[in-house]
Amino acid sequence: MAAGFQCGFAGIVAGPTATAVVTTNTRVRATMGYLGTLADIVQFPGPVVVGNWVLPAMRCRVQGVPAINATSQGIGYTALGTPGPMTVTTPDQRASGM
Image (cartoon, one colour):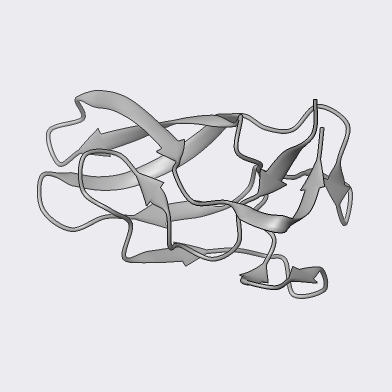
Protein backbone atom coordinates (compact mmCIF):
# COMPACT_ATOMS: atom_id res chain seq x y z
CA MET A 1 0.00 0.00 0.00
CA ALA A 2 1.30 3.45 -0.90
CA ALA A 3 2.28 5.87 1.87
CA GLY A 4 2.94 9.63 1.90
CA PHE A 5 6.50 10.85 1.33
CA GLN A 6 8.62 12.66 3.92
CA CYS A 7 9.46 16.23 2.90
CA GLY A 8 11.89 18.42 4.84
CA PHE A 9 12.37 17.93 8.57
CA ALA A 10 8.85 18.64 9.86
CA GLY A 11 7.22 15.47 11.16
CA ILE A 12 10.35 13.39 11.84
CA VAL A 13 10.36 12.24 15.45
CA ALA A 14 12.91 10.42 17.63
CA GLY A 15 11.71 11.63 21.01
CA PRO A 16 11.92 15.34 20.08
CA THR A 17 10.89 16.62 16.66
CA ALA A 18 13.69 17.15 14.11
CA THR A 19 15.08 20.66 13.66
CA ALA A 20 17.03 20.19 10.40
CA VAL A 21 17.86 17.70 7.68
CA VAL A 22 20.93 17.53 5.44
CA THR A 23 19.98 16.15 2.03
CA THR A 24 21.51 15.74 -1.41
CA ASN A 25 18.09 15.86 -3.12
CA THR A 26 17.70 19.17 -4.94
CA ARG A 27 15.45 17.93 -7.76
CA VAL A 28 12.29 16.20 -6.56
CA ARG A 29 9.71 18.23 -4.62
CA ALA A 30 6.20 17.69 -3.30
CA THR A 31 3.80 20.12 -1.65
CA MET A 32 5.74 20.23 1.64
CA GLY A 33 9.25 20.45 0.13
CA TYR A 34 12.03 18.21 -1.18
CA LEU A 35 11.46 14.46 -0.77
CA GLY A 36 13.55 12.71 1.86
CA THR A 37 16.05 10.02 0.84
CA LEU A 38 17.98 7.23 2.54
CA ALA A 39 21.13 9.39 2.40
CA ASP A 40 19.58 12.20 4.53
CA ILE A 41 21.07 13.05 7.92
CA VAL A 42 18.48 14.30 10.42
CA GLN A 43 19.37 16.65 13.32
CA PHE A 44 17.49 16.88 16.64
CA PRO A 45 17.65 19.15 19.70
CA GLY A 46 18.32 17.87 23.19
CA PRO A 47 19.36 14.32 24.05
CA VAL A 48 18.85 12.84 20.56
CA VAL A 49 21.43 14.53 18.34
CA VAL A 50 21.40 12.87 14.92
CA GLY A 51 19.45 10.23 13.01
CA ASN A 52 19.91 7.99 9.96
CA TRP A 53 17.31 6.12 7.92
CA VAL A 54 17.65 2.32 7.73
CA LEU A 55 14.37 1.16 6.11
CA PRO A 56 13.35 3.32 3.11
CA ALA A 57 10.53 2.93 0.57
CA MET A 58 11.07 -0.28 -1.37
CA ARG A 59 10.08 0.81 -4.89
CA CYS A 60 10.56 4.59 -5.07
CA ARG A 61 13.87 6.29 -5.75
CA VAL A 62 15.01 9.91 -5.99
CA GLN A 63 18.07 10.32 -8.21
CA GLY A 64 18.82 6.61 -7.72
CA VAL A 65 18.57 6.77 -3.88
CA PRO A 66 15.62 5.10 -2.09
CA ALA A 67 12.99 7.63 -0.92
CA ILE A 68 11.60 8.02 2.62
CA ASN A 69 7.86 7.59 3.14
CA ALA A 70 5.47 7.19 6.08
CA THR A 71 6.40 3.51 6.56
CA SER A 72 10.16 4.18 6.70
CA GLN A 73 12.13 3.54 9.90
CA GLY A 74 15.32 5.09 11.18
CA ILE A 75 17.63 5.24 14.19
CA GLY A 76 18.21 8.36 16.29
CA TYR A 77 21.45 8.54 18.30
CA THR A 78 22.16 10.44 21.50
CA ALA A 79 25.45 12.20 22.19
CA LEU A 80 26.53 9.05 24.07
CA GLY A 81 25.77 6.83 21.06
CA THR A 82 22.62 5.24 22.48
CA PRO A 83 20.19 4.35 19.63
CA GLY A 84 16.42 4.85 19.58
CA PRO A 85 13.64 4.67 16.96
CA MET A 86 13.10 7.46 14.41
CA THR A 87 9.80 7.66 12.50
CA VAL A 88 7.77 9.89 10.19
CA THR A 89 4.64 11.34 11.85
CA THR A 90 3.34 13.86 9.27
CA PRO A 91 4.13 12.81 5.68
CA ASP A 92 2.97 14.73 2.60
CA GLN A 93 -0.41 13.21 1.76
CA ARG A 94 -0.48 14.60 -1.78
CA ALA A 95 2.51 12.53 -2.93
CA SER A 96 2.83 8.82 -2.15
CA GLY A 97 4.70 5.68 -3.14
CA MET A 98 5.75 2.22 -2.01
